[in-house]
Amino acid sequence: MWNLFGNKPLLSDDDRQFQIECYRWLLTHFGGDDFYKEAKLVLPTAEFSPTQVKSQDAAAIETFMQVKKHAGLAEWPCQLQAQEEDPNLLVAPTVALKNVEENPLGAFSGNDNKEVIISYNPIIVLDPTQMVATFAHELSHYLTSTAPEPPPGGWGNWEFATDICATFLGFGIFSANATFNFSQYTGVDSPGWQVMGGGYLSEAEHAHAFAIFLRLKEISPETAFKHCDTSIKSYLKIALAELDKHSIIDELREVEYMPRGA
Image 1: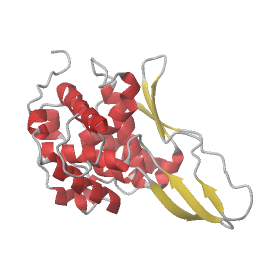
Image 2 (image 1 turned 90 degrees about the vertical axis):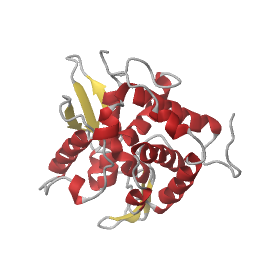
Image 3 (image 1 turned 180 degrees about the vertical axis):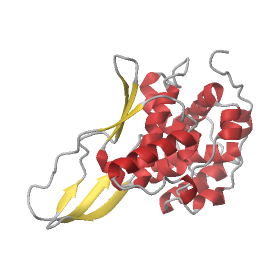
Image 4 (image 1 turned 30 degrees about the horizontal axis):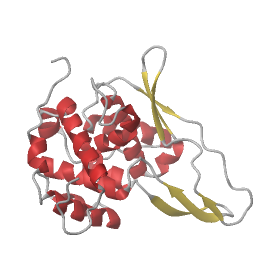
C-alpha cells in the first residue's frame, strides 16, 4: 500500500483508501452541481439553526426540517417519529455512571406502504449537536439507499459510508463533534456522568472525511476550526496537511457524475 508521509499517517492505508472510494461512490451518484454548487458547510450558528421553539418535540421537528433542507432533501417524503424513552438506569440516590444506550440514537426504516420512517431517541434533543448529527446520518441513509450500487466493500459497510455521506452533505462539524460526548449531569439527588456518542467512525476518521470535503469544496479550514472541538481541530489539521501532499483531491474532482435515471 502507498505511504506518502514521513510520519505515521492519521489513518491506516485501508481506512484512508475506503474513504477515498466512498467519495468516488458519492460523487458518482450524488455529485455534480448538487455537491459542488449547492452543498454548504453547515455551521452551528443562528443562520443554520431552527427558530425559537416551545417544546422538545417542536425542537426535534424544526431541527429535522432544517437538516433536510440543508441536505438538499427538503422534498423527500418521510415521517419523523420519537422512540420510547430509555429506562432510568439509576438504582440508588448516589453517584452513577450512565454509559449504556438502551435505544439507538436514530434509525432509518420503511413500512409495508413503502413509507420512509426516521426515528430518534428523545435523549438527543438535550444535545443540539448530537441531534443534528443523528438526523444527518439517518437522512444520509435515505439518500444512499437510492444508489444503484452498494458502497465500497458492499452493504456491510453501509453505516460507515453513511457517516461519510453526512459529511459529504455538509454536516462534518456536527458529525465529528458528536463522535464522543462526556458530560456531567445533576439530578435531584444523583450527580453523575453521562457518556454519549454517535456514528460509526472515530474522531480521526471523521476529521479525515471532513478534510476531503473542505478541499473539494475549496472552503477555508479557518471557517471550520473555530467550531470544532479541540481534538477534532488537531486531527483536521493533520488530515489537511496529508491531503495537500498528493493529488487525490484533483483525482476526485475528475469523477464523472452519473445522475439517477441517466
